[in-house]
Length: 93
Image 1 (cartoon, rainbow, N blue to C red):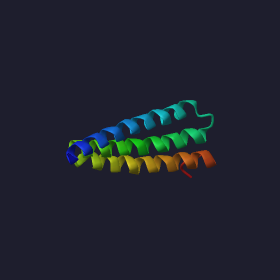
Image 2: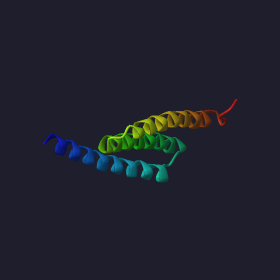
Image 3: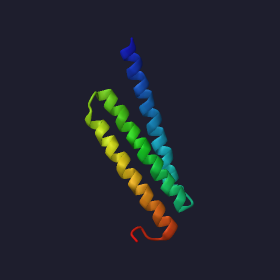
């Protein structure tokens, strides 16, 4: 019984995360300002990270958790670089 509940809850979470990915992709495409696009990229990598974590739970493999951690680190650095570029116009001083 609990295996079925876990399977279906992970499946529903993945569907909802895929819908969130589509909404952030829509904001990325039609965002009126650059700040909106950076924010949508930020939320997109978080949703991708969560999709990988739920897929790792579904499959039962640890490698997906490590890839999600790597995406989180690279996404944070990318967001900081884009924010710095928007504030000053240059990334490297």
